[in-house]
Length: 433
Image (cartoon, rainbow, N blue to C red; front, side):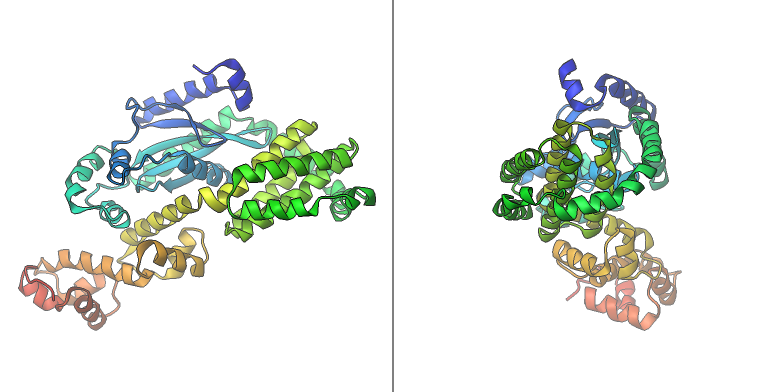
């Protein structure tokens, strides 16, 4: 049991949340966790204290003990970004869903459901998990055994479970209070905006404060964030924060204006380091709203420190997790829609990325371009249909998403080394050359 002092530090009532999570987990017969702002697990309903056997086995193959902390952080951040609900894949290809715990308009932690699979392992992602992680064939049977122990939940039910978890997160958060504050403060924000723009443009309107402003420290902070150095960034940020406090001479409105200026700098560094543009701009908009809720310097500086860590996470710690989630979502989409006309733009939109960035990411992660992968999936599916002589070649071509038989035959031969007709005649026993 966590100490009361620790619960106060968390910013929410952990005992209340544990009670809700226990009821949720018991009713759906699936695991659920509570994590803090750093992604560390505070509570988990799983009876298996060692965590997911499948994850542990894959990690063991590479002699690694990877923490799920970054996965939790990614889910928490994205859930906040997308309005309170986010369904995502972990690096092991397992599905989770997250909802944020919000107190005073600020992210304090998250609730996470899962892991589950959306289909039986042999039907969907296991082969891609093995492929992406370069797992030796000798481990495949054991991995299949562990994968078969993971609950299989249909996609529409996962969406419903995510919706229910969101409602629980709203219950344990102060969402109603936050909404009231937003309505009440809207007019104040509108009337204050010109004043804040003036503050930012002049660093509070005092030239004396600018004369001794440590610009070299600002440049150092930008550099450290862009390479994902949390410890170094925190040290320099503390120095800049102290300067802001001293130079503002206790004027809290000036301090807030200068903090906003620092947030702009932090976001610029995150973008330079490769963070997602839309995500950073969305966070900036939220932070512009949140800053009005603070009335103490200590709270404001802690909030600024959390922002810095989050931007650093977006650059460094969460990049790989994000890419893996994107790839598995793309793979899932392809395997559910390969029989239709699919474009790269369709899938990029599905995973909330630009077509160019998705294309680049997919090729780096899968070691082939998107159209090559799509054709590989379609050809594999066509092999199963070719085993049924009652289905004509034209129908097979159409059923796996090819627009005409000639192109299907061309792609089939390129991938397998033989034509679809020869493959059918051989009952799939001919060894391609």
